[in-house]
Image (cartoon, rainbow, N blue to C red; front, side):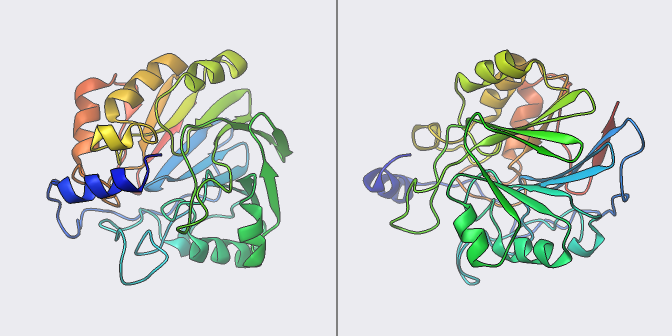
Length: 291
């Protein structure tokens, strides 16, 4: 990640594209209690929050329902679209996968509510468990790159990502960041978390094989001179989709918070211009069922 002087240079020279204060186009939906037998059902809730349903198991990635991706309620990136699923309409969640500790991926308010409901196992990268346990959120399993964990019908593999971690000024990279490969029902689902483009995609394919589905981030990428070490552009994500050989990819990390200089819906427009038809862009609340 770039240093403070680079951050200052970006902010002083920044010319963000304009986006509406709020977009009222989300049709909120209610997922079923479970996917039909043999199906893989994916619901994009918002940002990097995805509900993965298969083989009677429900997995939720990076759950965020708060109005701001920030430690404060009065400042920081604010929500510009509703979550596609109301929290109360979530089915039972068996496993919660957290990719890292940034506020747009680790929303303590949502995690507390999930913990209060019970039934959920929280899976986090090394070092993040301490934060969850301090908030009475659990049970928690920490994973390092290369580790695997059997949970019910699924095996969760922790895989590398090119990113960083921080929740305050002085805790940069004190905890790990990662992606996950979900292995269940003779298929692979890859959740990339938050990552820059790199050779880790080729190494993940070499180790695990071709994913049935990849969840790939496409937003928060401008300006490239600042963001390229930690975030993919839509072009990068299209290349990652090809390298992985994924049968289907779904775009995440876009359309809910404007975190960088590109406008809210520029990532989806650019992706549609450069990616194959097998790389899908879903609206918040929309689902797709794969065999």
